Length: 107
Length: 232
Image (tube, rainbow over all chains, first blue to last red; front, side):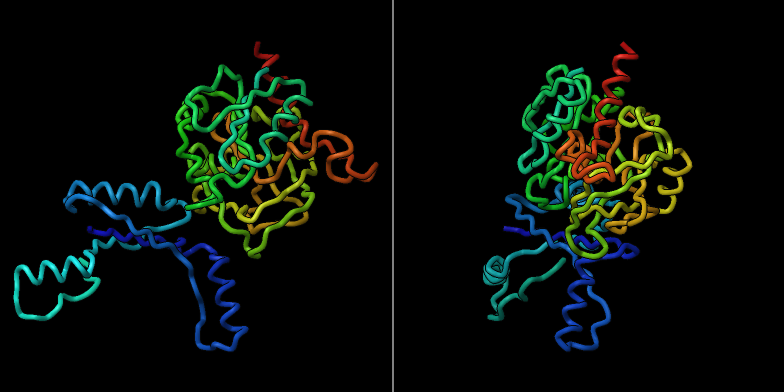
């Protein structure tokens, strides 16, 4: 089943207290070299049917209107992923070069 | 005056809001988020709490509740609507008020008696105060940092739509010390502090006169009731 991944991040110009707290913990535990951390969200939407233009338009609307609040966050990516099993299956059906399909392809 | 208080899954201060309405002389009406019926109320309160466990974003899922369709319609028709804390977050998520609320800048939950300055004493919920008056009511939130673009902040200030500002201490990193705002019409007001916890002597913030004697929150509820009587 196709999975759609939506990535949301707090707006770059806003303070991200969560990321700041993580960065503070990294510094306290002696992990140097990390100057900043920002924490966002990843949503995985599983769909039953084909990923066509109508669905993509709907996903964009959901991402911008519900999964994010455009006042405080930005949608930084929408990725359409097919599971590894399906890739292997389709590769076995169409090609027979014996190599498994690449995992986690994003397109 | 019949004032509806909407209970969402995870609301905490709905009973307190009902009690505040009663103490102010109004009739509280308990409303349920899953209904489409406002039961003929004259005003609405969206109470504090942690609706849906703050999942997704504070107030985000509650703002998509069935009853919110009617709340948005009623607000746009001019019905007085007060959003307290989580209710304020819902009003921003429902686009009835501008801006948004993010995690406190210091990263921790805060609970204190907070001094506010009333900057706009003409809204449905603040007409019983004097402009510039200072009041003390409890504040308790983890995600109360009010933010908006500079352009929106300038517009809110230019139009006199900042209703409350934090005095002495900015407890959560809110931009320009903003604690509460209103819409253009002045019928929808949202704020992070809790007026419903300062309505009865013995249970409010401390004052120089006596412990727990503060009742500065009562003015919110008497304001809206008095205005409805004047207009009737």
